[in-house]
Image 1: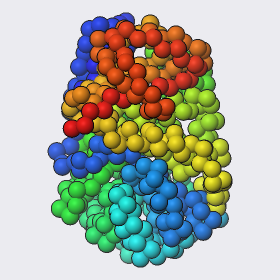
Image 2 (image 1 turned 180 degrees about the vertical axis):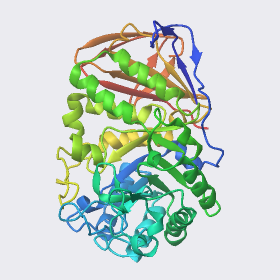
Image 3 (image 1 turned 135 degrees about the vertical axis):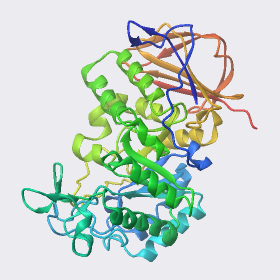
Image 4 (image 1 turned 180 degrees about the horizontal axis):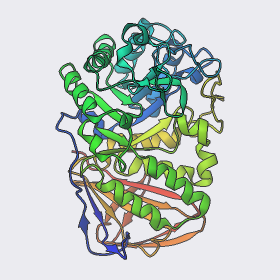
Length: 459
């Protein structure tokens, strides 16, 4: 994937000049095979406990037709394994305090229920990935009795070592070869037994990279999976040696700072430049405005971003990478969901944001110019007179193009683009109106307005 950025001026990355710089950072990417469907996928995070009053696989299965119609490609289920009772938090405990890696949380149903759910999703053309918590377990995991040597020991208490800042979980010891084999066998179980399509690996950067490389090599013998790391691409780009995609935590936090503190857009430009080079030219990033952690602990996307939330969501779907939707964003959801207790999403049946996400899901999936981590795609930052407020970019793959303008300010902006890369007939994807654009084009943008146009040529 090539990006065309602008040169460095006074050590600040500016998106404003005629000279072109093709950024292809030193490659930290893996040598494993990557499933082609990953390039155009999206991820819908399922908080099963809070999704329905029943909180079961069977109850969620009724939502599959709606999600398929909306255009969801990949379902990510938060951990489906049983939860430890010892040191349990709240009335129901944390998804992330596992008591058995190869069993189903009875709260959700049975193994057969999950198999049926996966099969139904596959029949509808959707992929299924599950959360995998390799770094730690709960206090009464079956291994604490059968294989206590799998755990780190606290020299002060001579007991299992608590995870940093989290009293309900204990640390595993990845120097133990037996643990590594047992963990890989457990991951293999879900692929062979349920035919899942991949893993979202919790706190992946807390686990040694060489374990993930070993695990991927072993599981690849069964199926080419999607490997998503909860790991910031900027902080630990070397994790691309094992993973297809990494998180963009820094972007998510800095955009909140940008909105709340009225910071200069050039700060965001610099962060995008860092992500562009992190992991190499074809490394994929996951973009999001909320997820289970953010919603519960830091606030809803509207608490964090206010009237900028939709523009930042558009960015997540149109910049180079994979977009994430969290359960309830299609409502929209203005509620912080409890983490350790039952707290069902307040579904109204109206789905006011459904068309918004349906449009974005469709263009991300179907326009080749939005393929993530694809060397055939180039992103051009377009020159304009409003670089201090507007992020304007064109993504191009052959004759297919997507034009995006984001007014990242609380002011009205008259934006004139003057760039040779912009030319031709484009369709406004939200209003289905066609426009002929030339190298010089004027746009009047309201505060936080977003515009998305596509030029799609059938192959």
